[in-house]
Length: 429
Image (cartoon, rainbow, N blue to C red; front, side):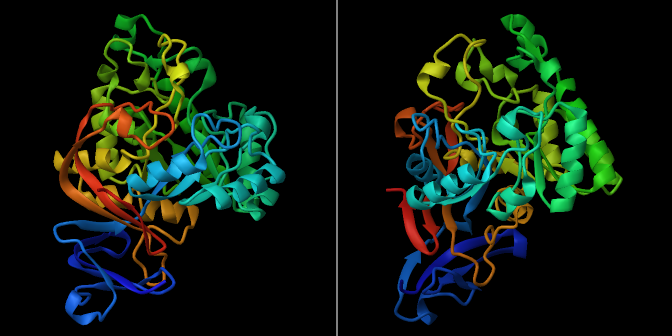
């Protein structure tokens, strides 16, 4: 590989507090050699140059909540289609969920996933293993061995551990093994048969609602246990205003933990469901506009650390059903950045805040050599046109399943190029 340079570009690197016009020099190993104003066409010699005038360069995004269909659900998504979708959205690294078939709850399945990802994926795959065996919430997995073999954390995916005794053991064991616990926070009994936010809209549509209390009970229980054990803990997919009050309380007690929010809950609310639009049946459900605005404030005030796509592709047969019967989930990895930029354009959030939540913050949580323009860091770079208008069309999506929650939505801000290890792997033509 020859040296190359990206020049005449606005460089945004939240980790290093960089926001300037300059260039990025990439060495022969596909790593960041230098970043700064002195990287120009005139003083870098005879190397390949990408002139990105009026564009923005950011570290490749890290999407830390992604479902990929392998093994068992290849008809929904596979590593090739996931890679193509991710790169078109500026995502170069993903944290994958363990709720595959079979579940990633043992070393042999984890080894298979790692080999499969190495052979089939273009992007960088960082797998999670399950918290409990077969995601049943009854018996915890062998964290130590799984972590040793390459699990980046532990979660039951779209389930939360309900049994208090089991969760107590998980916190205790995770502390001893220095393992990261990621919890989907929703009480099973309070959310049983629920398909939408509990409130006026659920009443009007005649659908069983999911109370905000279902989220708060699990969150509060986990944080109380965390205060006893001081393990590594991440609360996934915060969706309500009242949950933010719980987070704020424990943060003020100096409790160390992180949180994430789905871009869907930052961008949409329950009214967008309209007349039973099943592509907007999500878990957690879309909440009220008051909740949505509170989540944005939580992001701006650092109560929420990470934005995720919650990419969960589903085949059409699973979505073209009644709202009650349809499967929850939406494809979102290729529109993650553009939806986030909507918050920048409407002045809801600062650009650096948004970029940080999808680059350096997840990199820190999962201890990845990514998410910044540090010297010798892999040159994973997204070049974006902040102002380019476009419309998300189902037929143009690269994900194998086309169940987007924002079909035909007008967006502003588009990925123009994506570099992976210094190589140009996507270009919007």
